[in-house]
Every structure is written in C-alpha cells, then in structure tokens.
Image (tube, rainbow, N blue to C red; front, side, top):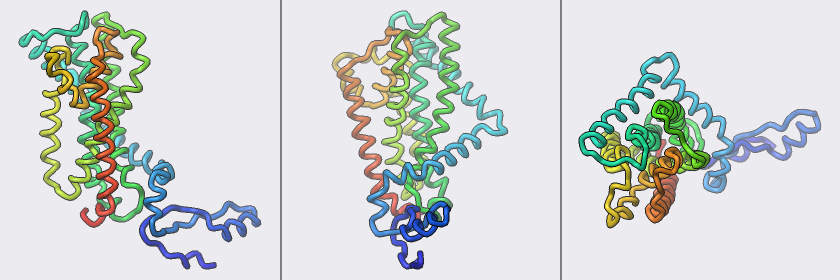
Length: 304
C-alpha cells in the first residue's frame, strides 16, 4: 500500500505502519516512522505529543539559555546585579525608612532576598513566556507540534537565573551567619509551585498577545505593579489580620511565604488559611490558562 494513500487533516504524529513494519522487521531493519495526519488526532494525543516532542522542548530551552548567556557579559552580570540592587533599595525603603519589622531574628536583607527569589522566578517566566509565541512565529507557522512547548521552554531561562540567585542568597546568609533549618528540604516543592503559579497567567497572556499585540506593553506594567503589591520587600505578617486572608488571594503571596518558611529556619511562619487560598488560586489560574491556550492555539499560525 502506498504510504500517501492516507492524507493528513489536522494533527500529526510519527507512527509505524503495520505493513511497512512487518517488511522491514523481516529484513532486520527498524520500522520506518511515517508522519500521519488524521482528523481529531491532535486532540486525542495532545498530552502524549508533549512527551513525544520532548527533544524539541530541550532544543528550544537550550537555544534560549544560549542566547541569554553565550558570549555575553551583561547576561551573567545582570542576573547578579539586578537582585542585589533591588535588595539594597527595598532594605533601605522598607527596613530603614518605613521601619517595617523582619520575621523574628532574620536580618532584613535576607528577608528581602528570600522574597525576591520566587518573585523574580515568577516575573521572568511570565515575561519570557508571554512573548514566546510571537518570537517563534516562523516555527509556529511551518511545523505542527503542541504549542504549549514554546512558552514552557521559555521559562527554563528563568530557572537558570534562579539557580544563580539562590547561590547569592546562601552567600548573603553566610555573611550574616544565618543558616536555614530542616525546612529547606521542601524548597523544590515551592520552586515547582512558583513555576505553576507563573504558567497559568503566562499562558493566558501569551494567547492574548498573539491576537492583540499591544499586550506586550501591558506585561511590564503588570510585573511592576505585582512587585509592589506582593510581600517582596516586607513580611506578609505586617498585613492586618482582618485583611490577610484576602491579601493571600494574590497567588504569589503563598509562594513567597512558602519560600521564606523553607529558607529562614522557621522564623517566618506560614499563615495556613491564606496559603491554602493561594494554592486554590494557583490551581484555578493554571486551569484557566491551559484551557484558554488550548482553545486558541489552533489559530496561532493564521494570526501570526
């Protein structure tokens, strides 16, 4: 049978054809994989295709990291200078001028930097992923693959920056003679939570940015506004009890509080009602983001 007898429609996966597999197997060769497009295949195999195209994810992630750091000085320097300068400014404004309290015996610069870690991870993924589809317009318009791979791969650069920042934090903690406690073993879980918290709104904004290009001007404002309404430069414990639960509906609040609980040796306590509320908001936003992205990704090639 001619392999072109079955023509493509709307989805693609490379699968072996039974007759070709038998003939090649008898000859001692590996069965050939043919690209078959079939009505409804995209929807049925979408999540399986994410694993099938894992090499594309790795390639895009490595490309983004290389562009950021390869043969550059400002990329590495910026990853170090930006959090340090932000820490100094927030320490002066909130710690020295506003006289806001720290958590227990935690030095104020350590409190600030522990809050900046998840915030920079969140904001970097949000910013990079939101523009990823438009930045990869040539790839999107020519090749089929699950489009969810593109914004997900864009977030890997933020994880590299996070690894640099956490080394800086440990150096600052060592300088002040303040070391974490056993709670640090839960830090990977809160890193995953920070990634999930950022992917929800990032996927939603990514889909909107494809159709409405002026969203690229709104994203920096959202990031800047979120920096000041989130407890980055201060402890969330300073929020009055009457408002703390509602304040925790900001999903970044639960993430930052979780990071501080892990890193500050138990000096920063989790406000469990607010933390659970943040988890619920993260789950809802992630579901909405994926749902809207999946609903609109079929139109990306036409709109770009």
